[in-house]
Image 1 (cartoon, helix red, strand yellow):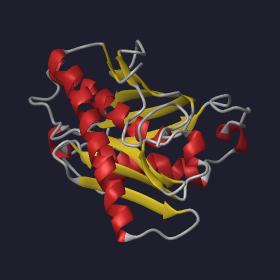
Image 2 (cartoon, helix red, strand yellow):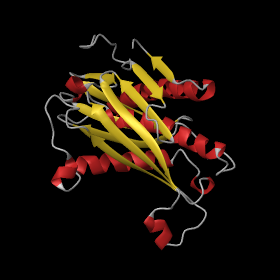
Image 3 (tube, one colour):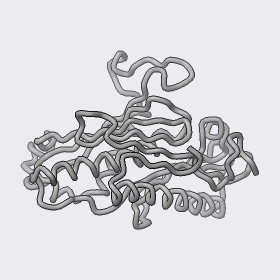
Image 4 (cartoon, one colour):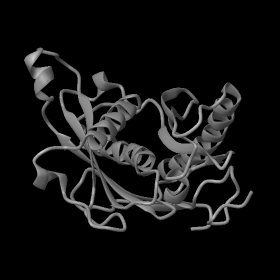
Length: 252
């Protein structure tokens, strides 16, 4: 089955990652997955979060995340959540997902008593913004940790594994990898999968939007997700091992 953009059902959208996208951040990447574009920055705060200080937790750091969509990241302008005085439920859920996903990448005891903030700002949305944010934020986190190591603030790199994510779903009865918005908005089943580079699952978010799905469907979707994430991890490793500032996968 051919999709609207010509991809095969088991094919990722073209992916491009650009490092050092923001001048002042300790780590910063622009990740593009098809028409979805997310700026991911990592900022080092030389303090633990308040809850750790209040609980007198010593010799341990923290990684946390914030997520937002720019007002014109979609076809119509949306109101900034800051102007409404509160975060929406979707935003809170996504930034918690990003935070706990990236904490699985790092040995917090090796980070020292500091916090790394991961800010994921969607500048253009076409489906898969949370999964793109996780994949890009990992590289921003890596660069921030490398900066700390180069500044001799930590003795060793605290990263213990890659983290990457993708979406899968069933559209018109067909399992598909990496849904764009038109596919996601009509999907019978929508699922986001977060994994480590070594192949362990961090989170699986799956929902039947219309009809319930079978165990066989579930296994097919997971197989698609694993294949896609393995390719994203290869892309991350190419950037890290070869110290590249830009790398692409697919027809971008």
